[in-house]
Length: 388
Image (cartoon, rainbow, N blue to C red; front, side, top):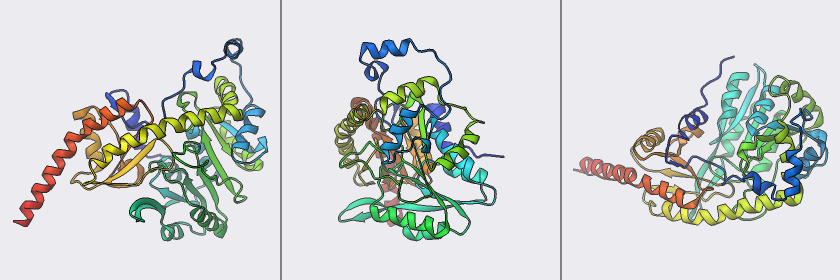
């Protein structure tokens, strides 16, 4: 099997520790172990643990609380993994065969695109589009592209909701349309919901879980829960499918790590979980308006749809440069790392995170200004010459 280069992850691995301003981060300021276990008795209990093999699917109470996070109750419908990426990998590896097609949402975290092409026959993309709605830009499902992408041999419809890179959340109507498309051909829905819980306003984002008998949800503690280094992820699916996925997980990491299992169990206790998610929402609600001031300062070249969840926002720009060109110039000339639209399957877009220290974020955004000003001048000059 050959697999294509995962451009976004490879470039982040290469450069995220080489720049002064890393605006490619998509979570919030991580919790420390001291914040997670402030009680001395809890910390002493952890220190006393032997680092043994945990249960292969994760301890039962943890799986029960993960299930409840999605309005379900059966711990046998949960498999704990080493990060959300392993959850997605295991699910697609376990579902997609050579004759199958995958319907894949764009823009998106492109792990599923690469895996669908590696394991399946074909990946057919459908789109979210940035559209004007009541004087504001919003990301909306392109229903026609979904209808074209979902075919008789479609095995899986891949969704990311809340979406990465846009922070958009599907409406109830859009969710129902995706479920209806899956029912029409008997496809599975694989919904990556790792940003669920990081809402900027309003209640917890709706989940696909429970809407249809062939739904798989993946998630984890890296984004909304501010624990990326814990590498805690999960798959939520019918118990028979979880047992099937376990056969594939046995060829990967076998079990979650002991510390992942132990600490995730503490995090997903409902009152602790709610406290952590409120911290995340507080950070993004405080930071986003200041970032939006910078976006507004470039309103002549940016189109912007406010994110609904996650510490990420994406702008569409009108400048004579490809997104990867901007990415490379900012990295080399300004020591700023952003994520180009090309790494999410779209064109002239830039994504940047705003969940870390706001002073650092604003300083990094300020470093972008000189390049934008240069390109604006070049654009005006080109237009003047064309008009002459």
